[in-house]
Image (cartoon, rainbow, N blue to C red; front, side, top):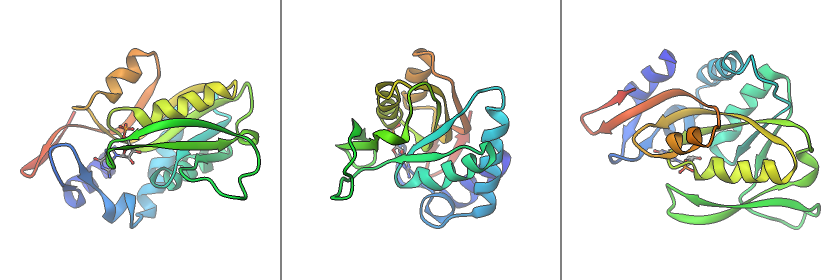
Length: 189
Ligand code: 5GP
């Protein structure tokens, strides 16, 4: 997606050869025109797929998933990273290893918010080693639903998540795939 690639090139900050910071338009300050265009693009890409619900993970995935859900006209639900006294319903849970925080955490989705038989599209901001997507896949399957596909904003093609998920037969569609990056520049695949 050209608009996204242009934003990455002009506003992205390469923190290391593995970590890209995109706080100025994606992860902290939000460029709503870009979000809108990305939501529409996910709808176009997955227009041949039955999608009953969109699932993401807090926090960065929520805005993007909401924009996509607006075009699909389906509910969006996000996996929570913390629990609280008001989470009284039973939850589906999965352990996820965080690439950026270098630790594991539990994500939860309350049982009423994924129904058996639904086709669920997963949306997230980055794909690195695929741990977040695998955690969400586990929750979807535990609910008796089906993973319809995975929509990613930025896939880092030099990490193994995309390969691993595609080898499992999962349809992964990314709006921008980075082949390599360094402080000298970013190359897209
Ligand atoms: P994975 O689970 O695929 O290993 O990592 C994906 C998750 O880690 C995403 O939900 C995203 O929040 C975070 N992440 C992975 N790589 C990056 C990165 O280069 N930059 C930022 N900002 N987040 C990342």
